[in-house]
Length: 160
Length: 111
Image 1 (cartoon, rainbow over the protein chains, first blue to last red):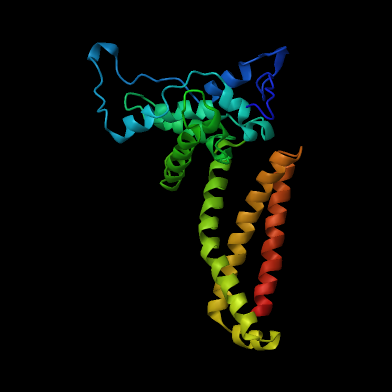
Image 2 (image 1 turned 45 degrees about the vertical axis):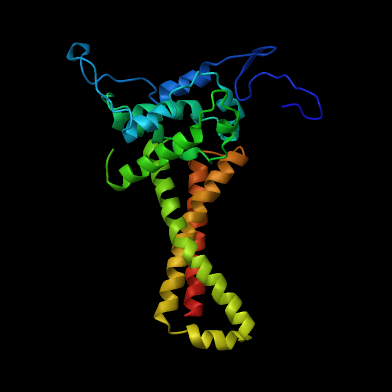
């Protein structure tokens, strides 16, 4: 952060600046919606608690990406977002990855399709700036790699 | 933008990359070996002409390189220059086709 002893304070990159350090986060959250970052219930709440084994592969994959606080740092440091304004960005894709691995979700294939659509997970170049600067220590690059792999296999199998 | 198109371009890009990796290694290793051995152009051609193996090897090489190169070039231009959309897709397709034609002409001359 401090290069030659000087700390530079600047608004988040890749987002419209409102004033001084304040940015408009609307494009950031619009892209969460585009990547279908919303849980889709599969069973009514009256049917009791869903049992998810803590050591199941899906739960562990989702676990690794759960602690996102939506701060937008990963989006601001991502060069691919800067180069390709259509790219949904690390946070939205990390969120999609947790839902694709959520066994309670009713539309996991839909989440995967949304994450792989257009300038989605495949636009990522794995620079790993998001993982480097994430204040909660998440690794969105790993989540995006998981989405790429899963979408690749799904495409070859002819799944939507 | 067609959502599925990007996914299929990614799949094609990765598969052709996997095809190209061993082909490039064999190509480079053969070139070094041939140059070290001091073979002339005529001596090389006498070995490759009529060889189905080399025709297949470089035919596959050209096809994979045309697909891989055109997809990669499109991505680079889209990110590095203010050029996107259908015209860029068309240009990348023309580039791939040009590589295909020029490459197969070279394969034809070699084998």
